[in-house]
Length: 342
Ligand code: FNR
Image (cartoon, rainbow, N blue to C red):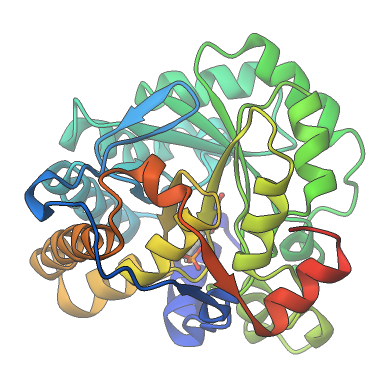
């Protein structure tokens, strides 16, 4: 199967299989505050991911590129939405364009449409130092995401089978990269031991890419007859994974993602310790079903709602939201208890 066909397949199946919505964020509750010392008009959504300053804690997470005219159009629209709303945006894996330069246009369009925006490049952990540099140069990226997607690869018949040496390659890329490197999962979550190893390798930001949203096991299983269905419910839920990563209290920025669809879920993710939240499948669905204007309106609404939530809780900025007390119940409480995480 051609790479281009696979990318279009992923988009179609991501839309068809949808988001699970069992991120564990339903187990998180804020404690109502009757005397919030806050003013809505002064709520500040600015945040940072390591060295990068962002005007919004939300970003459009990696999805596509390299799959023909349809993916050029999707990336163009996502870039226009990012420019209009001030969101950072990641492109999908650029490996195909490194192997076939004729595909680079579908990534470059993102920089062309949003010359001043914050844009993340994206490669897998098989990348070499030279490939990492080329991916950054291709789109003048402000940061580079390196994705870890072992379960997705194992579920794909044509996927990788040899995962040795990834940490060392990441360490080499980090030490040579001129832009910050963000290591991300793709919907199976990261445990605290993984985050600790990445931190020791010099990584300063991770996107936990938790379970509960877009599910690449379901997507791959839906594309063929041999089903590795035990992977369909495999992974660390987003809420648990944020708490695992944040519990390390290391100098590593924690980004939440995996199934996030609402302002309330973003606020809960930040209160669990994340500094920013990535959204992929939900934004794709809004764009494909309702179009670019609807996507821009949705993002603007989420920004407004986030400020409303922060004001109700008395948090004037993202740092204050991160420090608010929360109640953790149910499966998430159980998991964190088993793992000795407060
Ligand atoms: C993705 N994702 C992804 N991630 C990555 O690092 N490189 C990639 O090329 C892709 N490709 C891709 C295609 C499509 C169609 C989707 C929906 C997603 C994964 C994405 O960035 C994110 O980690 C997961 O989708 C989980 O977040 P959501 O979708 O639940 O918000």
